[in-house]
Image (spheres, rainbow, N blue to C red):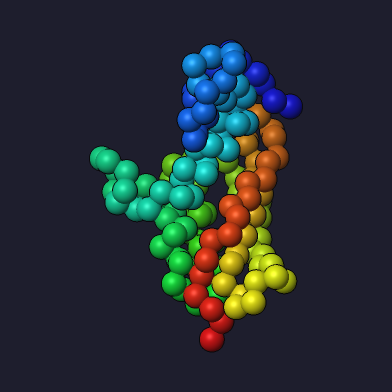
Length: 135
């Protein structure tokens, strides 16, 4: 169930819309998803006044593409959600590669989560992060 309001915040990346100056996020589900995506993509030290904020998925670009790297990413996601988004429960993290990727270096991260106060289950896909090839 998505609870809709007039506009909570501008959608990122900023785009114009016919309804308002910028396209707005109009549901709490969408707001949580945008904030979660920001948490995953922000590198620790990048956010002003909070050097601990962020998973920093791009920090894993040159790590080996193996289960140990996936475990590190999963642990970092769980730690950051517990600290910055405690109203969420991560229910699963899945890493997949494409059969078309010759060197096995492109990974899609799919995070399933529940927004506890709303009782809503959602999925966020981060497509095509590149990690080092397999050893």
